[in-house]
Length: 172
Ligand SMILES: Nc1ncnc2c1ncn2[C@@H]1O[C@H](COP(=O)(O)OS(=O)(=O)O)[C@@H](OP(=O)(O)O)[C@H]1O
Ligand SMILES: Nc1ncnc2c1ncn2[C@@H]1O[C@H](COP(=O)(O)OP(=O)(O)O)[C@@H](O)[C@H]1O
Image (cartoon, rainbow, N blue to C red; front, top):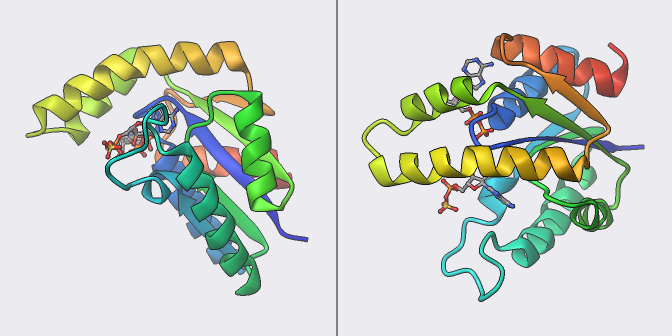
């Protein structure tokens, strides 16, 4: 049966990079897989009042895209995204229609901020928003403890993070 793994963490923690690299590792092992960057499923403007991250639309897109990937033969689905509560986790699991594991990346905030400066070079307003959100979201995620597994990856390279994430999910 197909199973899903959500790589989560605060903004700039490396969830997108880790999910992409995990997909590459699965491909190298010839395990049919798909990678979903949840940010793209909510990239629609404007969002409705009271739903600033487009949560409802994200779930509808997730349901449709996942079904297509499963129909295409994906056995492992790796997602990068943010969930802030156990209720949101349940809603994701229901939309996916698959067993879901959640791995949270923890990265020391000064390192996150250095990465954000690099990623948002030439984008001062985006940088300011992400810098502000990084600490706030880290506190929200730590309090919510929605994950099955928390890994501190402050000093790990992207391929190392991908390996850690997969090891916790698949055992190797
Ligand atoms: N609760 C919740 N739900 C969904 N997404 C969340 C949430 N909190 C923060 N984020 C993160 O917000 C970041 C939005 O950044 P974007 O650059 O995509 O901006 S925009 O939505 O296009 O305006 C984007 O940050 P990055 O993770 O750095 O890409 C999202 O992951
Ligand atoms: N393990 C890592 N080591 C060094 N830089 C990283 C690592 N993971 C991600 N990055 C870089 O940090 C930035 C944020 O990573 P990204 O994957 O976009 O994070 P997120 O999806 O959590 O916002 C990107 O510029 C990325 O290239």
